[in-house]
Amino acid sequence: MFEIKGISYQYQQKTILDIENWQANQGEKWLLLGKSGSGKSTLLNLLAGFLKNQKGKILIHNQDIHQLTPTQQDQFRAKNIGFIFQKPHLISSLNVLQNMLLAQYCANIPQNPQKCTEILESLELETHTHKFPHQLSQGQAQRLAVARAVLNNPVLILADEPTASVDDENAQNIIQLLQTQAQRCNATLVVATHDQRVKTQFEKKFEL
Ligand code: ADP
Ligand code: MG
Figure 1 (cartoon, rainbow, N blue to C red):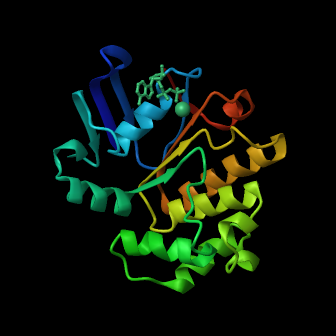
Figure 2 (tube, rainbow, N blue to C red):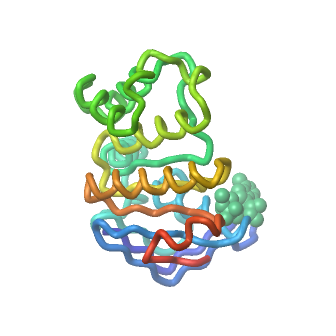
């Protein structure tokens, strides 16, 4: 599904990532482990093409995304990758449903409120569709971020420390949600964390 070969990444001449090889198959669920500062976010951003690769190869479905033009990269990402940032990054002037519709618009997919509502329902957000982000609890905002990330049936779901700022119960819920949604799309899931609480919920682990 994806393949990382011989990559390294530097900030200001300091190498913070050095990965010889990491391969993941379609539908696998991975935990990306490493203490704070070990390069987890950098690696997720490289996988999503938000950061430009400096050395080695990153292939997603045999496609080297760093060979694409910026526009092609945006389209590839919008169509294939669901990214859940540490903070929800919702558009504050748009309501819940509009935040979802925007994700379809950005991916060049016809806007389909019915599909948005279905996903919102599966994440128990159906009664909040007309609320604005500031009217949501932290847990609801995070579920909306998950809903938006999985809306276009991505083949790869990347989540950066999704449980960092939630209590134990919500941490379990969010991991469960990510796993269920990944299963639904048959997507490969990568959850970056240093959260010990979620370690037992994944069979596959990659440690930085
Ligand atoms: P993690 O997500 O595992 O905490 P990061 O990928 O955020 O790790 O960061 C890895 C290292 O790179 C850290 O030492 C961090 O300080 C450094 N770093 C991250 N982003 C930048 C940046 N934009 N400029 C310079 N250094 C950075
Ligand atoms: Mg990080």
